[in-house]
Length: 382
Image (cartoon, rainbow, N blue to C red; front, side):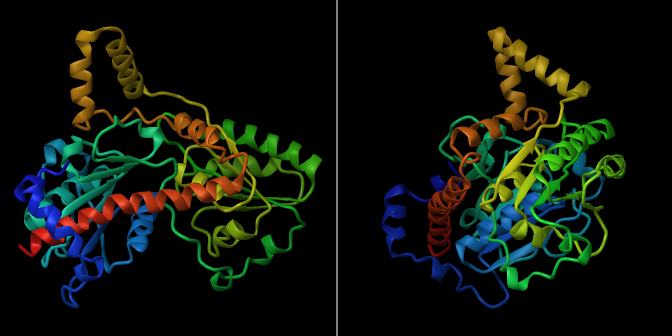
């Protein structure tokens, strides 16, 4: 529940909401927008913010956050402030009715915006809250974070996804990809994502597996690196691919992924990127997930040991749960849980099931977000 809901008595709120329409929220002047998005450096997080904003159908403003050295501090220490931002010039009124954020670094700025806007602003955070859940009016999450059930936590199986652009608007594939024989198997490489590791040795194992499958299946391999892929991994794979293939290193011109996302016959993707797996599953083509091995660092081992001890010894649980609720423990993400729940829902066995999940979940999320906007507007008009 929002800490601001108590500012408007429930009877008055209940009477105000039916007469409010979302299109009235947008009528705030040409120089303002009712929805603000706090964009960070991660493509997957930003894509989810834009997907939700597009689905709402209201004008929105994108604020690209750039951080100074203070961004390493936990949100509990930063408080409601802009002290971790390099540039604060865009943070000026008129203030929004809804702020949508994602990731640890955006939390302090989102809370600062609510402090400026007062009761007529709502906060929606995607992912995990990195602090007490009551900081936000709504948290939209997915299984890998294993958040406890609460009135302001809404769990989907898939992250929120934008519609891909029409094929007619995409640039054509370069000849080095377009001229390869069918069927096309596109291999998408992620990277290190604690505790998962993509090393050169793991990349070689993947390459040998792909080479064997290609010898049996025929066609071509297209191996695409991402921003997190260590360059040495792609270099280690090239000599082991003996059939028709092409490789794309991140940063090269003419990224083929947007076109191949719609034209490939089959995908293989490392399991570290939830967003990438979800995009491919909802594309309607077969997807094979390649699991990366775990190599827990010292911090991960300490957090897991504390968690296991708290499960065995009741007297340790309050301290552990307090640290987790404050966002001080960042090493508890369980990617395997995400994949298992998707598999149980039939998303891997039937591509159409993933598409149905995506459509149902965006509507379920909108049913949670739109009332928050109406509440904010009702308070603004009092």
